[in-house]
Image (cartoon, rainbow, N blue to C red; front, side, top):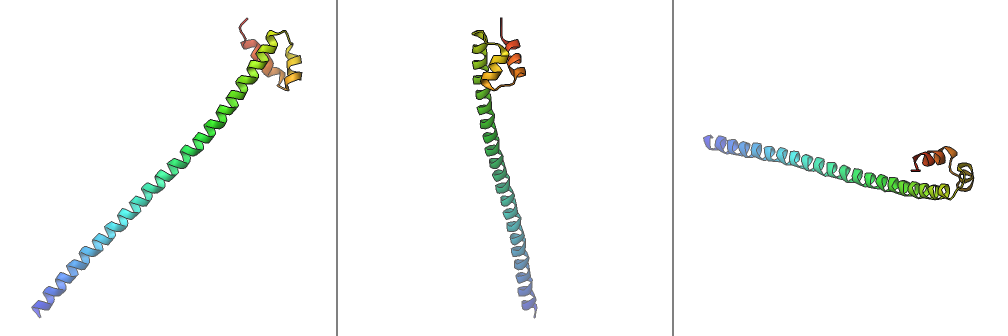
Length: 103
């Protein structure tokens, strides 16, 4: 009978050791999943930020082009009202560009 107790104790210790390893493995997998999820979210945010920056860049380029056209028209003697009529831009925007233009 003492042999049986020793065998059972050894089996119990091995089972305890294996369940600790299983628990650690599950913890490791959960941690790995959290890291992958984090990196995936960061990548998605970078892609969104890139798209947003690209759109803002397009708008800024368009605005610079419109400002350049308006500035050239002002230099050629066109009135702000006439420029607004020709370009479809708001008169206030044209007047602001005129105020910023060096004389």
